[in-house]
Image (cartoon, rainbow over all chains, first blue to last red; front, top):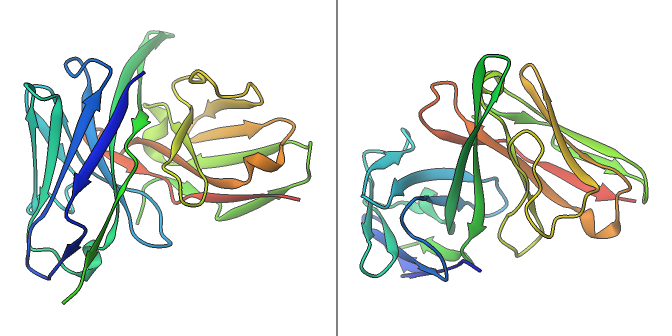
Length: 128
Length: 108
């Protein structure tokens, strides 16, 4: 059974760079996309970005200028860096595996994307 | 603001049926996935695709879609179904992901 284990610094000062890593245990790393999601205290979920096993990335436009994702296939790990953090970046950060598929119906393909395995979450607080 | 809109809160009597909806233009082209989140826990995928349940998810959870609206139905709600529920899909550009605003379900 696939498990994701994530870690990283939990307390940052404004302008510093957030750095988190997620390790994939017990399953394939290739053939999947891998995402980061965050949840500010008392708020909803926000998608940050995703990467495939080759390092092809896709970022939330609202965070794109500050986000970098990378992968290490030798360790089955993927990482997130978010630069120039502010208090608004205080949140619970999750890594997740993305399941992708499609269904053919009535002459069209319909696609789905589902985050089927999640890490335990890492609380990141930005405070001076 | 999210491109996927959900009602903030709904309540359901124990054993009754509750439907949670998610509206957004991208849902005409992409299926929604649904997640259950209980306090202090990571989200849990409960429905994906046309109406697929991951292993271990009870069959009282089902999904459907019509036009720009996706729905998650819980038939015979149990006390343990009390949680926040989020839908998720592609955004209107089709290039990025977006989560719904979330629905808090209370089981009375």
